[in-house]
Length: 457
Ligand code: HEM
Image (cartoon, rainbow, N blue to C red):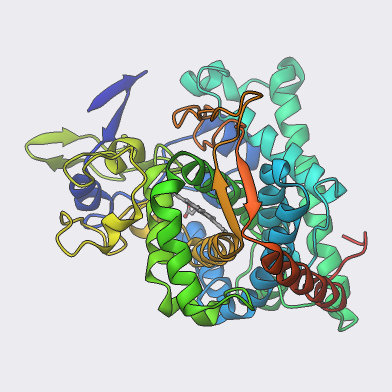
């Protein structure tokens, strides 16, 4: 489907085969981003990877991200995910109604620990507040139609003293640089004292002379993880809880059977168990398929040369959207697509899908999400541990009747999550609570000893 926005065609892809054909097989020309005057050029000087056009600068950022998130590095981060998920399930025991806040704290703490080696103990942490403010600002810059300069880029050249809206964006850019640069500098100071735990920003400092870049680029790259990794993971987990509430009576018993058989009831699952838990793996995949957080495939791609597909011209500079809502809910590949049904991933006769994972939640080609491995580890660990310890059902009203949930009630925007809903999350029994509590206390001690817990960052 093609939509014309101004003079630029926007091509919306609703079929996974076409998405792979263009954005993977022809990724040499489909890996740029459309011109983003407000969020890219004015907001970050295109120093942030999300909006960066394809080219040398992007390749340098991408290589550093790749090195910092490859399998070896991911293994050093697994203990963080194990420890924080132990705390997360204990939070669920104590205040299950605040499930969303526990998922947000977990996801933010993991990403900030990986990024800077600092722990987030509470959603009230000032670091989280500052990060949220920065993210809300970025989201505001991305609202279609909000800024005339997006349609008429010439307006972005008006001197800032004549255009208060432009001055405000430039001021925020300076503040962002000061905030994120300050975080990176603190990591450096800790490194100089020999006190910095392993982190992505530490890795960037170690590589700084090999990969020269401006201070602005450095601070944006060091903060790329929580901009892109915190809300996405938490929103996916919120969809998982919604799927548990709406359809859990059909499939949670199968997950419990597998967990009881493989793990037993005297410890919670760990990464070492992953290879023996195919049903949990199917639950993770089905969550990513059923309600993809990046509902339109994340930031759009753009082609850097004219191209033809099926006889149609795709002019250079077109905006290309991999519409994950259309792709993941395409009946041809996923029969009864709105039904959350993990078993579809265990069916040897399921329809062929042009990606080995069986979904495209992390995007395509050279622009594919560099945080995929980290995100998958987080999803496996939290989902396995949560299902091991809990039952989920619909909440009851005053008359004891089930309160239905609306599986379509989602927030608007490029990244979506379910709007708050009621559900009943209960531990499977007192022996489960005892183990969850004991493991959380041990995890808390370890997190305090090994990572930065103070307010220095
Ligand atoms: C469930 C969690 C996540 C989902 C579903 C997700 C999904 C996506 C998608 C769809 C894209 C766009 C891909 C494309 O353009 O083809 C993307 C880009 C990106 N993601 Fe993720 N992501 C997740 C978690 C993370 C995490 C944990 C990190 C960092 C540690 C991360 C870092 C990034 C970055 C830096 C980009 C931009 C890459 C570029 O433009 O070259 N993401 N993600």
